[in-house]
Image (cartoon, rainbow, N blue to C red; front, side, top):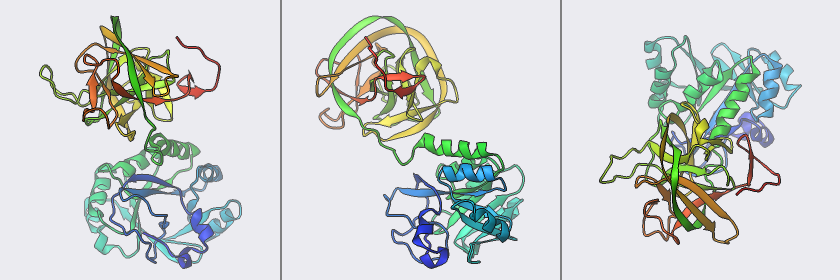
Length: 402
């Protein structure tokens, strides 16, 4: 999935060819960059579990073009070569123009073919063996998308080229990028409203796929105290969590340090495993959400997203399915980081199914310690951050929390 300098011009043009975002790899492409008539950029070597999503923009609105360029997308499709040349004079872009069902670059080199799909029989004709160019743009006719997109992902598994789908808005683009979890290689966003550009960029930013690991630190438990009753929040997700995964939570009075609270995925003798649930803490506690923000647990609703983090700091987003608030007995846990300067605290329900995640090493192989077994001297994982928050956004200001 590479392009030679002869097919796209200078290396400088290649550098600004398209914006890429990390996502699970679907293709088994080589680590080298063969000289093929493809217009997918040959990037620097990436970890084998990663590949890149491609975004092209198809529009006749200059505001849309400006919004796309500002967000790092510079490949544009035009209905004519004259229009492509005209727009190239006003912004630094890579113009491609459409002629019938074929797409050409500035040098009149054919770089992609468009396949219009309006029926299941036409969909079956789109197979890797029938594709003559490295880049295939699928243009679905009508309102149906999800199942056809899944069929395309399955059919082109292992295909060395690039498969993109034309999307009429950011929501459709998300469908194509997530089909069968791995999604197509990219999308052609055909829009005349800059809001769709902004929403699609926000979609990538929420996943923040180029920063998939958070820095966690060890903290030593300094206090465990049974306190009174409080309203605690169970967060049920639309995703399954594995041992060692949970949510980052802190009490509202100490936003500078967040505890990694384990899910209820572990089996016990008294209750069945609920790997979709985190018994996260009281209503006033903060939880980490996408965009480097926090939300009060009491403000979570069905459909919102949270950040699921594992023992090594690797994270992903998950959708909240339900929030359950009930009055339960609470435990106060305090812990100090290794330097001893900062103390963090959290309230959790006093129950065997509620646990804090431990460091990968030095915990005797345990991934989590139930709060009912927690004692002074145990090590748990926390995430350090700034001390002040305003509407969930970290800010720099003088603040005293007790």
